[in-house]
Length: 283
Image 1: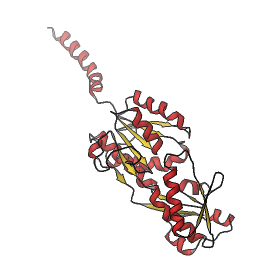
Image 2: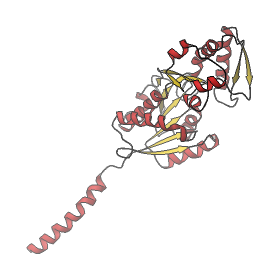
Image 3: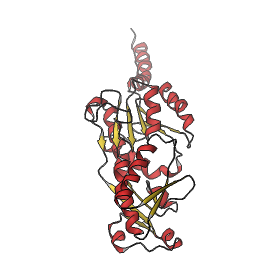
Image 4: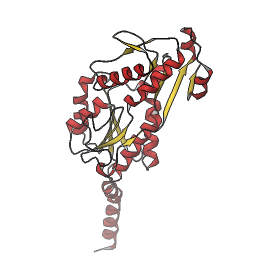
């Protein structure tokens, strides 16, 4: 081969090296994120979720891509949304709350699912065991039912002269019946009557976001802790962990939040001892 032809051949081969190198690079993994709600109030939770991913080595847009699916409070859309994620062949589905988690479980038995729910995952049918979930699901949960005595006690301490508590429940909710029984039992131990109403603004909520929007108070598990666990487990699965090797975690941190502006509008004075133990006071 003549020297000129050899140099031309070498140059042509070199031009294809970057393309070949790019073709050999592994594709960025894609995580599906499914929620029955809207994205607007989720920014702080998503930040905690991304923190959990980053703790294990995955930064959105750099090491992992996230496909978000929001049902905007229309739960009938969930099966189609999760089916879309399945068609996209995402590596993991991170799912928020029980109804979306059940929809994800019904849609796939092969894609790993990491959930964050407020109900017992075993009783609700998500997993058969907390320590060794043998299906394709694992995650983190907080038992809302166990918070009922604390919530009723806080209301009673805020309004010691009240003899009855009104409860607002969603009868179509998957855990409404058990939550209602827990609240009624907790009220009974304090000698309080309970009245279940369909249209009433309750004083104590189960999420901080309601208090930030103008509710009086909330007592709930820490959303930051929950979503950080969600991101952590999602990243561990991306690194190769099996769902069966990741025991379902239980929330350990709880938060009490008050809105002083709302208390003033209701003509209430929050006792100093409650203010002292609050995790956040919104003014």
